[in-house]
Amino acid sequence: MFSPARAWREFPQRYRLEAAKCSGCSKILYPPRLVCPECGGRKFTQEALPRDGKVVTYTVIRVPPAGFTEQTPLPLALVELTNGVRLMVQIGDVEDPESLEIGMPVRLEFRRISWDGEAGVIFYGHKAVRAGS
Amino acid sequence: MRDVAVIGIGMTSFGELWETPLRSLWAEAALAALDNAGVDSVDLITIGCMSSGLFTGQEHLASLLADELGMAGVPAARVESACASGGLAVRAGFAEVASGLCDTVLVTGVEKMTDVDGADATYALGTAADAEWEGFHGVTFPGLYAMLARVHMQKYGTTREQLAHVAVKNHANGLLNEHAQYHLQIGVEDVLDSTAVADPLNLFDCSPVTDGAAALVLTTVERAREIAGDKPVVVITGSGLATDTVTLANRGEIAELGAVKLAGERAYAMSGRKPEDIHLVEVHDCFTIAEIMATEALGFFDLGFGGSAVEKGLTSLQGKIPVNTSGGLKSKGHPVGATGVAQVLEIVTQLRGEAGQRQVQGAKIGMAQNMGGSGGSSVVHILEVV
Image 1: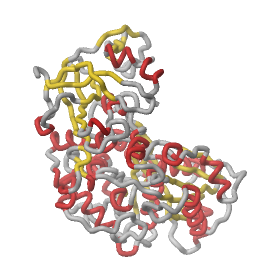
Image 2: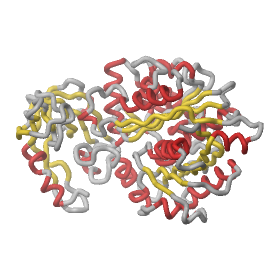
Image 3: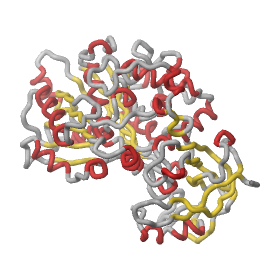
Protein backbone atom coordinates (compact mmCIF):
# COMPACT_ATOMS: atom_id res chain seq x y z
CA MET A 1 0.00 0.00 0.00
CA PHE A 2 2.80 2.44 0.89
CA SER A 3 4.61 1.06 -2.15
CA PRO A 4 7.60 2.49 -4.07
CA ALA A 5 5.36 3.15 -7.08
CA ARG A 6 2.95 5.14 -4.98
CA ALA A 7 5.70 7.13 -3.34
CA TRP A 8 7.13 7.92 -6.78
CA ARG A 9 3.90 9.07 -8.41
CA GLU A 10 3.10 11.35 -5.47
CA PHE A 11 6.46 13.18 -5.61
CA PRO A 12 5.05 16.31 -7.36
CA GLN A 13 2.51 16.89 -4.57
CA ARG A 14 4.54 15.63 -1.61
CA TYR A 15 7.89 17.18 -2.53
CA ARG A 16 6.95 20.27 -4.53
CA LEU A 17 3.37 20.92 -3.28
CA GLU A 18 2.12 21.06 -6.87
CA ALA A 19 -1.56 21.98 -7.15
CA ALA A 20 -3.89 22.66 -10.08
CA LYS A 21 -5.56 26.02 -10.70
CA CYS A 22 -8.92 25.80 -12.49
CA SER A 23 -8.89 27.87 -15.68
CA GLY A 24 -12.64 28.45 -15.28
CA CYS A 25 -13.06 29.67 -11.69
CA SER A 26 -9.47 29.93 -10.37
CA LYS A 27 -10.12 27.40 -7.56
CA ILE A 28 -6.91 25.74 -6.42
CA LEU A 29 -7.10 21.95 -6.16
CA TYR A 30 -4.65 20.02 -4.00
CA PRO A 31 -4.15 17.32 -5.03
CA PRO A 32 -5.03 17.98 -8.70
CA ARG A 33 -8.18 16.39 -10.15
CA LEU A 34 -9.64 15.88 -13.62
CA VAL A 35 -12.71 18.02 -12.93
CA CYS A 36 -13.20 21.10 -10.78
CA PRO A 37 -15.73 20.39 -7.97
CA GLU A 38 -16.63 24.10 -7.93
CA CYS A 39 -17.47 24.86 -11.59
CA GLY A 40 -17.09 21.58 -13.49
CA GLY A 41 -14.14 22.97 -15.44
CA ARG A 42 -11.65 20.51 -16.91
CA LYS A 43 -8.77 22.83 -17.82
CA PHE A 44 -6.09 23.59 -15.26
CA THR A 45 -2.72 25.24 -14.94
CA GLN A 46 -0.06 24.08 -12.52
CA GLU A 47 0.65 26.15 -9.44
CA ALA A 48 2.71 25.52 -6.31
CA LEU A 49 1.03 25.98 -2.93
CA PRO A 50 2.13 28.80 -0.63
CA ARG A 51 3.98 27.65 2.50
CA ASP A 52 2.25 29.81 5.07
CA GLY A 53 -1.02 29.19 6.83
CA LYS A 54 -2.81 28.65 10.10
CA VAL A 55 -4.15 25.74 12.13
CA VAL A 56 -7.90 25.13 11.58
CA THR A 57 -8.01 22.24 14.05
CA TYR A 58 -5.54 19.79 15.55
CA THR A 59 -5.04 16.74 17.72
CA VAL A 60 -2.23 14.82 19.34
CA ILE A 61 -2.46 11.13 18.55
CA ARG A 62 -1.46 8.94 21.51
CA VAL A 63 -2.47 5.59 19.99
CA PRO A 64 -0.89 5.48 16.53
CA PRO A 65 -1.66 3.34 13.50
CA ALA A 66 0.86 0.75 12.26
CA GLY A 67 3.94 2.52 10.89
CA PHE A 68 3.88 5.49 13.27
CA THR A 69 4.63 3.89 16.64
CA GLU A 70 8.07 5.55 16.83
CA GLN A 71 6.54 8.99 16.35
CA THR A 72 4.03 8.90 19.19
CA PRO A 73 2.71 11.25 20.52
CA LEU A 74 1.98 12.48 17.01
CA PRO A 75 0.59 16.02 16.59
CA LEU A 76 -1.54 16.49 13.47
CA ALA A 77 -3.36 19.50 12.11
CA LEU A 78 -5.75 20.58 9.44
CA VAL A 79 -3.98 23.65 8.05
CA GLU A 80 -5.45 26.40 5.89
CA LEU A 81 -2.88 28.07 3.64
CA THR A 82 -2.96 31.72 2.65
CA ASN A 83 -4.70 30.86 -0.65
CA GLY A 84 -7.51 29.04 1.17
CA VAL A 85 -6.34 25.49 0.39
CA ARG A 86 -6.58 23.12 3.36
CA LEU A 87 -4.42 20.07 3.94
CA MET A 88 -3.83 17.48 6.67
CA VAL A 89 -0.25 17.50 7.95
CA GLN A 90 1.82 16.53 10.95
CA ILE A 91 2.99 19.37 13.17
CA GLY A 92 6.75 19.25 13.62
CA ASP A 93 9.05 20.48 16.38
CA VAL A 94 6.37 20.34 19.09
CA GLU A 95 7.97 20.34 22.52
CA ASP A 96 4.80 21.04 24.47
CA PRO A 97 1.51 19.76 22.94
CA GLU A 98 -0.38 22.04 25.33
CA SER A 99 1.04 25.03 23.44
CA LEU A 100 -0.83 24.13 20.25
CA GLU A 101 -3.94 26.14 19.46
CA ILE A 102 -6.50 26.81 16.76
CA GLY A 103 -5.41 29.78 14.66
CA MET A 104 -1.71 29.18 15.32
CA PRO A 105 0.36 30.50 12.38
CA VAL A 106 2.41 27.76 10.72
CA ARG A 107 4.78 27.28 7.82
CA LEU A 108 5.18 24.10 5.77
CA GLU A 109 8.64 22.56 5.86
CA PHE A 110 10.03 19.55 3.96
CA ARG A 111 10.48 16.66 6.39
CA ARG A 112 10.65 12.90 6.69
CA ILE A 113 7.09 11.62 7.33
CA SER A 114 7.40 7.85 7.88
CA TRP A 115 10.02 5.17 7.45
CA ASP A 116 9.23 1.87 9.05
CA GLY A 117 6.60 0.50 6.67
CA GLU A 118 6.82 -2.98 5.14
CA ALA A 119 7.98 -1.64 1.76
CA GLY A 120 11.16 -0.22 3.32
CA VAL A 121 10.50 3.13 1.66
CA ILE A 122 11.31 6.36 3.46
CA PHE A 123 8.46 8.78 2.80
CA TYR A 124 9.05 12.51 2.66
CA GLY A 125 6.58 15.34 2.52
CA HIS A 126 5.70 18.50 4.39
CA LYS A 127 5.03 19.15 8.05
CA ALA A 128 3.70 22.32 9.60
CA VAL A 129 5.92 24.09 12.11
CA ARG A 130 5.05 27.14 14.17
CA ALA A 131 5.79 30.19 12.02
CA GLY A 132 8.80 32.12 13.25
CA SER A 133 10.18 29.16 15.22
CA MET B 1 -43.14 2.44 -4.60
CA ARG B 2 -44.40 -0.38 -2.36
CA ASP B 3 -44.47 -0.07 1.45
CA VAL B 4 -41.80 -2.17 3.15
CA ALA B 5 -42.07 -3.87 6.55
CA VAL B 6 -39.52 -5.45 8.87
CA ILE B 7 -40.88 -8.88 9.85
CA GLY B 8 -37.82 -10.51 11.37
CA ILE B 9 -34.89 -9.46 13.54
CA GLY B 10 -31.87 -11.33 14.87
CA MET B 11 -28.42 -10.58 16.20
CA THR B 12 -25.48 -12.17 17.95
CA SER B 13 -24.26 -10.86 21.23
CA PHE B 14 -21.61 -8.22 20.50
CA GLY B 15 -18.14 -8.59 21.96
CA GLU B 16 -14.70 -10.09 21.58
CA LEU B 17 -15.91 -13.45 20.32
CA TRP B 18 -12.59 -15.26 19.91
CA GLU B 19 -14.17 -18.68 19.44
CA THR B 20 -16.47 -17.73 16.55
CA PRO B 21 -15.48 -17.16 12.89
CA LEU B 22 -17.14 -14.54 10.68
CA ARG B 23 -19.29 -17.04 8.82
CA SER B 24 -20.78 -18.47 12.04
CA LEU B 25 -21.45 -15.03 13.50
CA TRP B 26 -23.27 -14.11 10.33
CA ALA B 27 -25.26 -17.35 10.13
CA GLU B 28 -26.35 -17.08 13.79
CA ALA B 29 -27.83 -13.63 13.19
CA ALA B 30 -29.35 -14.60 9.82
CA LEU B 31 -31.02 -17.73 11.21
CA ALA B 32 -32.36 -15.80 14.20
CA ALA B 33 -33.93 -13.21 11.87
CA LEU B 34 -35.45 -15.86 9.57
CA ASP B 35 -36.87 -17.72 12.58
CA ASN B 36 -38.18 -14.49 14.05
CA ALA B 37 -39.92 -13.72 10.75
CA GLY B 38 -41.18 -17.25 10.30
CA VAL B 39 -39.89 -17.56 6.75
CA ASP B 40 -37.39 -20.06 5.34
CA SER B 41 -36.67 -18.63 1.91
CA VAL B 42 -35.81 -15.19 0.57
CA ASP B 43 -35.39 -13.61 -2.87
CA LEU B 44 -32.17 -11.79 -2.01
CA ILE B 45 -29.50 -11.44 0.68
CA THR B 46 -27.75 -8.11 1.26
CA ILE B 47 -24.59 -8.00 3.37
CA GLY B 48 -23.05 -4.91 4.91
CA CYS B 49 -19.40 -5.44 5.72
CA MET B 50 -16.66 -2.84 5.77
CA SER B 51 -13.45 -4.79 5.47
CA SER B 52 -13.49 -8.56 5.87
CA GLY B 53 -10.39 -8.51 3.68
CA LEU B 54 -8.26 -6.49 6.07
CA PHE B 55 -9.82 -7.91 9.24
CA THR B 56 -9.93 -11.59 8.29
CA GLY B 57 -8.33 -12.04 4.86
CA GLN B 58 -11.66 -13.03 3.32
CA GLU B 59 -13.45 -11.30 0.43
CA HIS B 60 -16.22 -12.62 -1.86
CA LEU B 61 -18.53 -12.71 1.15
CA ALA B 62 -21.87 -12.67 -0.65
CA SER B 63 -21.51 -16.12 -2.19
CA LEU B 64 -19.59 -17.54 0.76
CA LEU B 65 -22.32 -16.56 3.20
CA ALA B 66 -25.29 -17.53 1.00
CA ASP B 67 -23.74 -21.00 0.85
CA GLU B 68 -23.18 -20.99 4.62
CA LEU B 69 -26.94 -20.75 5.03
CA GLY B 70 -27.55 -23.53 2.50
CA MET B 71 -28.82 -20.91 0.08
CA ALA B 72 -26.26 -21.17 -2.74
CA GLY B 73 -28.09 -19.99 -5.85
CA VAL B 74 -29.97 -17.18 -4.08
CA PRO B 75 -28.91 -13.71 -5.27
CA ALA B 76 -26.60 -12.08 -2.73
CA ALA B 77 -24.73 -8.78 -2.75
CA ARG B 78 -22.25 -7.22 -0.34
CA VAL B 79 -22.32 -3.45 -0.01
CA GLU B 80 -19.68 -1.21 1.54
CA SER B 81 -19.71 2.34 2.84
CA ALA B 82 -17.16 2.04 5.66
CA CYS B 83 -18.95 2.09 9.03
CA ALA B 84 -22.24 2.85 7.24
CA SER B 85 -22.12 -0.48 5.37
CA GLY B 86 -24.89 -1.94 7.53
CA GLY B 87 -27.21 1.01 6.95
CA LEU B 88 -26.47 0.76 3.26
CA ALA B 89 -27.43 -2.95 3.33
CA VAL B 90 -30.79 -1.94 4.87
CA ARG B 91 -31.23 0.73 2.22
CA ALA B 92 -30.38 -1.76 -0.56
CA GLY B 93 -32.88 -4.31 0.75
CA PHE B 94 -35.53 -1.62 1.20
CA ALA B 95 -35.05 -0.46 -2.40
CA GLU B 96 -35.40 -4.00 -3.76
CA VAL B 97 -38.72 -4.63 -1.97
CA ALA B 98 -40.06 -1.12 -2.56
CA SER B 99 -39.32 -1.34 -6.28
CA GLY B 100 -40.90 -4.76 -6.70
CA LEU B 101 -37.69 -6.45 -7.79
CA CYS B 102 -37.93 -8.71 -4.73
CA ASP B 103 -40.69 -9.60 -2.28
CA THR B 104 -38.61 -10.80 0.66
CA VAL B 105 -35.01 -9.82 1.46
CA LEU B 106 -32.63 -10.96 4.18
CA VAL B 107 -30.67 -7.84 5.20
CA THR B 108 -27.50 -8.52 7.16
CA GLY B 109 -24.41 -6.85 8.54
CA VAL B 110 -21.28 -8.43 9.95
CA GLU B 111 -17.75 -7.61 11.06
CA LYS B 112 -15.12 -9.85 12.62
CA MET B 113 -12.52 -7.47 14.04
CA THR B 114 -10.52 -9.38 16.65
CA ASP B 115 -8.52 -11.65 14.35
CA VAL B 116 -6.00 -8.79 13.96
CA ASP B 117 -4.09 -6.87 16.63
CA GLY B 118 -4.88 -3.33 17.71
CA ALA B 119 -2.48 -1.58 15.32
CA ASP B 120 -3.81 -3.54 12.34
CA ALA B 121 -7.41 -2.90 13.40
CA THR B 122 -6.63 0.83 13.67
CA TYR B 123 -5.08 0.65 10.21
CA ALA B 124 -8.08 -1.21 8.73
CA LEU B 125 -10.54 1.32 10.17
CA GLY B 126 -8.27 4.11 8.97
CA THR B 127 -8.83 3.08 5.36
CA ALA B 128 -12.24 4.77 5.65
CA ALA B 129 -10.34 8.07 5.69
CA ASP B 130 -8.50 9.41 2.63
CA ALA B 131 -5.56 7.00 2.51
CA GLU B 132 -3.34 9.21 0.34
CA TRP B 133 -3.98 12.66 1.84
CA GLU B 134 -4.91 11.86 5.45
CA GLY B 135 -3.72 8.34 6.30
CA PHE B 136 -0.28 9.03 4.81
CA HIS B 137 0.42 11.45 7.66
CA GLY B 138 -0.55 8.97 10.38
CA VAL B 139 -4.03 10.18 11.21
CA THR B 140 -6.40 7.71 12.89
CA PHE B 141 -10.18 7.78 13.29
CA PRO B 142 -10.04 8.94 16.88
CA GLY B 143 -7.67 11.62 15.53
CA LEU B 144 -10.14 12.82 12.90
CA TYR B 145 -13.04 12.96 15.37
CA ALA B 146 -10.75 14.66 17.88
CA MET B 147 -10.21 17.38 15.29
CA LEU B 148 -13.99 17.71 14.81
CA ALA B 149 -14.43 17.83 18.60
CA ARG B 150 -11.82 20.56 18.92
CA VAL B 151 -13.64 22.74 16.38
CA HIS B 152 -17.06 22.06 17.94
CA MET B 153 -15.72 22.96 21.38
CA GLN B 154 -14.18 26.17 20.13
CA LYS B 155 -17.12 27.26 17.99
CA TYR B 156 -19.99 26.32 20.30
CA GLY B 157 -18.44 26.02 23.73
CA THR B 158 -19.08 22.28 23.94
CA THR B 159 -17.23 21.04 27.02
CA ARG B 160 -15.05 18.04 27.77
CA GLU B 161 -17.59 17.03 30.45
CA GLN B 162 -20.47 17.14 27.96
CA LEU B 163 -18.60 14.67 25.75
CA ALA B 164 -18.19 12.42 28.79
CA HIS B 165 -21.93 12.52 29.50
CA VAL B 166 -22.56 10.78 26.16
CA ALA B 167 -20.45 7.81 27.24
CA VAL B 168 -21.99 7.73 30.73
CA LYS B 169 -25.55 7.70 29.31
CA ASN B 170 -24.81 5.06 26.70
CA HIS B 171 -23.12 2.76 29.20
CA ALA B 172 -26.16 3.17 31.47
CA ASN B 173 -28.40 2.08 28.58
CA GLY B 174 -26.07 -0.78 27.65
CA LEU B 175 -26.48 -2.19 31.16
CA LEU B 176 -30.06 -2.97 30.13
CA ASN B 177 -29.18 -4.67 26.83
CA GLU B 178 -28.27 -8.35 27.08
CA HIS B 179 -26.51 -8.23 23.69
CA ALA B 180 -24.20 -5.34 24.63
CA GLN B 181 -20.42 -5.82 24.71
CA TYR B 182 -20.07 -3.97 28.00
CA HIS B 183 -22.23 -4.11 31.07
CA LEU B 184 -20.36 -1.44 32.88
CA GLN B 185 -21.57 1.51 34.87
CA ILE B 186 -19.27 4.51 34.49
CA GLY B 187 -19.22 8.10 35.68
CA VAL B 188 -17.99 11.35 34.14
CA GLU B 189 -14.73 11.10 36.09
CA ASP B 190 -14.04 7.64 34.63
CA VAL B 191 -14.19 9.11 31.12
CA LEU B 192 -12.05 12.11 32.01
CA ASP B 193 -9.46 9.90 33.73
CA SER B 194 -9.28 7.24 31.01
CA THR B 195 -6.23 6.86 28.77
CA ALA B 196 -5.69 9.63 26.21
CA VAL B 197 -6.21 8.34 22.66
CA ALA B 198 -6.22 11.50 20.53
CA ASP B 199 -6.54 14.81 22.38
CA PRO B 200 -9.17 15.74 23.52
CA LEU B 201 -10.66 12.23 23.19
CA ASN B 202 -9.94 9.50 25.74
CA LEU B 203 -10.50 5.76 25.67
CA PHE B 204 -14.04 6.09 27.06
CA ASP B 205 -14.93 8.51 24.28
CA CYS B 206 -14.31 5.76 21.72
CA SER B 207 -16.44 2.84 20.60
CA PRO B 208 -14.62 -0.49 20.93
CA VAL B 209 -13.34 -3.13 18.54
CA THR B 210 -16.12 -5.71 18.32
CA ASP B 211 -17.15 -8.95 16.65
CA GLY B 212 -20.81 -9.34 15.77
CA ALA B 213 -23.60 -9.67 13.25
CA ALA B 214 -27.19 -8.49 12.91
CA ALA B 215 -29.98 -9.32 10.46
CA LEU B 216 -33.48 -8.26 9.40
CA VAL B 217 -36.11 -9.77 7.12
CA LEU B 218 -37.89 -7.21 4.95
CA THR B 219 -41.02 -7.84 2.93
CA THR B 220 -44.10 -6.07 1.62
CA VAL B 221 -46.58 -4.71 4.14
CA GLU B 222 -49.27 -6.99 2.65
CA ARG B 223 -47.20 -10.11 3.27
CA ALA B 224 -46.18 -8.80 6.69
CA ARG B 225 -49.84 -8.50 7.70
CA GLU B 226 -50.53 -12.07 6.52
CA ILE B 227 -47.66 -13.39 8.62
CA ALA B 228 -48.13 -11.14 11.67
CA GLY B 229 -51.83 -11.75 12.19
CA ASP B 230 -52.92 -9.47 15.03
CA LYS B 231 -49.39 -8.40 15.99
CA PRO B 232 -48.18 -4.88 15.16
CA VAL B 233 -46.22 -4.43 11.94
CA VAL B 234 -43.15 -2.19 11.77
CA VAL B 235 -42.85 -0.29 8.48
CA ILE B 236 -39.88 1.60 7.05
CA THR B 237 -41.48 4.92 6.12
CA GLY B 238 -38.36 6.89 5.29
CA SER B 239 -34.93 6.12 3.87
CA GLY B 240 -32.21 8.70 3.21
CA LEU B 241 -28.68 8.23 1.91
CA ALA B 242 -26.09 10.95 1.40
CA THR B 243 -22.39 11.53 0.84
CA ASP B 244 -19.98 14.26 1.90
CA THR B 245 -16.27 14.71 1.26
CA VAL B 246 -14.24 11.88 2.80
CA THR B 247 -11.31 14.24 3.15
CA LEU B 248 -11.81 16.78 5.95
CA ALA B 249 -9.59 19.26 4.11
CA ASN B 250 -12.14 19.41 1.26
CA ARG B 251 -15.12 20.07 3.55
CA GLY B 252 -16.09 23.70 3.98
CA GLU B 253 -17.76 23.49 7.40
CA ILE B 254 -16.37 20.86 9.74
CA ALA B 255 -18.38 21.67 12.87
CA GLU B 256 -21.47 20.15 11.18
CA LEU B 257 -22.09 16.70 9.69
CA GLY B 258 -23.39 17.56 6.21
CA ALA B 259 -24.08 14.00 5.07
CA VAL B 260 -26.11 13.28 8.21
CA LYS B 261 -28.16 16.44 7.68
CA LEU B 262 -28.85 15.56 4.04
CA ALA B 263 -29.67 11.91 4.72
CA GLY B 264 -31.96 13.00 7.56
CA GLU B 265 -33.76 15.53 5.38
CA ARG B 266 -34.32 12.88 2.72
CA ALA B 267 -35.72 10.40 5.24
CA TYR B 268 -37.96 13.07 6.80
CA ALA B 269 -39.22 14.07 3.35
CA MET B 270 -40.06 10.48 2.35
CA SER B 271 -41.89 9.76 5.61
CA GLY B 272 -43.55 13.15 5.95
CA ARG B 273 -42.19 13.34 9.51
CA LYS B 274 -40.34 16.07 11.41
CA PRO B 275 -37.78 15.82 14.23
CA GLU B 276 -40.57 16.55 16.77
CA ASP B 277 -42.44 13.43 15.60
CA ILE B 278 -39.62 11.01 16.43
CA HIS B 279 -39.95 9.16 19.74
CA LEU B 280 -36.44 7.68 19.90
CA VAL B 281 -33.31 7.55 17.77
CA GLU B 282 -30.22 5.38 17.42
CA VAL B 283 -27.32 7.55 16.23
CA HIS B 284 -23.79 6.66 15.19
CA ASP B 285 -21.82 7.38 18.37
CA CYS B 286 -18.51 5.94 17.17
CA PHE B 287 -17.05 8.71 19.35
CA THR B 288 -18.84 10.81 21.95
CA ILE B 289 -18.57 13.96 19.80
CA ALA B 290 -20.24 12.08 16.92
CA GLU B 291 -23.46 11.60 18.93
CA ILE B 292 -23.60 15.28 19.80
CA MET B 293 -23.03 16.34 16.19
CA ALA B 294 -25.50 13.75 14.82
CA THR B 295 -28.33 14.87 17.11
CA GLU B 296 -27.76 18.42 15.87
CA ALA B 297 -27.57 17.42 12.19
CA LEU B 298 -30.83 15.46 12.48
CA GLY B 299 -32.61 18.52 13.85
CA PHE B 300 -33.26 17.32 17.41
CA PHE B 301 -31.24 20.23 18.77
CA ASP B 302 -29.96 23.47 17.29
CA LEU B 303 -26.33 23.59 16.21
CA GLY B 304 -24.16 23.90 19.29
CA PHE B 305 -26.81 22.64 21.72
CA GLY B 306 -26.20 18.89 21.40
CA GLY B 307 -23.67 18.96 24.22
CA SER B 308 -25.86 20.75 26.74
CA ALA B 309 -28.80 18.49 25.74
CA VAL B 310 -27.01 15.33 26.84
CA GLU B 311 -25.75 17.04 30.00
CA LYS B 312 -29.33 18.03 30.91
CA GLY B 313 -30.55 14.47 30.37
CA LEU B 314 -32.73 15.32 27.36
CA THR B 315 -31.34 12.29 25.50
CA SER B 316 -31.50 9.78 28.35
CA LEU B 317 -33.98 6.91 28.50
CA GLN B 318 -36.58 9.10 30.21
CA GLY B 319 -35.60 12.25 28.33
CA LYS B 320 -37.36 14.28 25.65
CA ILE B 321 -35.78 12.25 22.85
CA PRO B 322 -34.06 9.07 24.05
CA VAL B 323 -30.83 8.58 22.07
CA ASN B 324 -29.10 5.20 21.77
CA THR B 325 -31.36 3.18 24.03
CA SER B 326 -29.41 0.07 22.96
CA GLY B 327 -26.25 1.44 24.55
CA GLY B 328 -25.09 2.75 21.20
CA LEU B 329 -21.83 1.88 19.56
CA LYS B 330 -20.10 2.95 22.76
CA SER B 331 -21.53 0.29 25.05
CA LYS B 332 -23.30 -2.20 22.79
CA GLY B 333 -20.15 -2.40 20.64
CA HIS B 334 -19.30 -1.48 17.07
CA PRO B 335 -18.74 -4.38 14.67
CA VAL B 336 -18.64 -1.82 11.88
CA GLY B 337 -20.53 -3.62 9.11
CA ALA B 338 -23.17 -4.89 11.54
CA THR B 339 -23.81 -1.59 13.31
CA GLY B 340 -26.27 -0.04 10.84
CA VAL B 341 -28.40 -3.19 10.83
CA ALA B 342 -28.27 -3.49 14.63
CA GLN B 343 -29.46 0.12 14.97
CA VAL B 344 -32.59 -0.63 12.92
CA LEU B 345 -33.04 -3.83 14.95
CA GLU B 346 -33.09 -1.78 18.17
CA ILE B 347 -35.74 0.54 16.76
CA VAL B 348 -37.89 -2.43 15.66
CA THR B 349 -37.48 -3.99 19.13
CA GLN B 350 -38.64 -0.75 20.75
CA LEU B 351 -41.57 -0.22 18.35
CA ARG B 352 -42.69 -3.80 18.99
CA GLY B 353 -42.59 -3.05 22.73
CA GLU B 354 -40.07 -5.83 23.30
CA ALA B 355 -37.20 -3.78 24.75
CA GLY B 356 -37.72 -4.89 28.36
CA GLN B 357 -36.12 -2.64 30.98
CA ARG B 358 -34.97 -0.11 28.40
CA GLN B 359 -38.39 0.15 26.72
CA VAL B 360 -39.39 3.68 25.73
CA GLN B 361 -43.07 3.80 26.71
CA GLY B 362 -45.44 4.56 23.85
CA ALA B 363 -42.73 4.50 21.17
CA LYS B 364 -44.44 4.49 17.77
CA ILE B 365 -41.94 6.28 15.51
CA GLY B 366 -38.17 5.75 15.61
CA MET B 367 -35.09 6.66 13.63
CA ALA B 368 -31.72 5.01 12.96
CA GLN B 369 -28.70 6.99 11.72
CA ASN B 370 -25.56 5.23 10.51
CA MET B 371 -22.39 7.01 9.39
CA GLY B 372 -19.23 6.18 7.46
CA GLY B 373 -15.76 7.59 8.10
CA SER B 374 -15.58 11.07 9.57
CA GLY B 375 -19.03 11.82 8.13
CA GLY B 376 -18.25 11.02 4.48
CA SER B 377 -21.46 8.99 4.21
CA SER B 378 -24.65 8.57 6.16
CA VAL B 379 -27.80 6.48 6.00
CA VAL B 380 -30.96 7.38 7.91
CA HIS B 381 -34.12 5.28 8.28
CA ILE B 382 -37.43 6.17 9.90
CA LEU B 383 -39.61 3.31 11.13
CA GLU B 384 -43.19 3.34 12.36
CA VAL B 385 -45.45 0.77 13.90
CA VAL B 386 -48.84 0.46 12.18
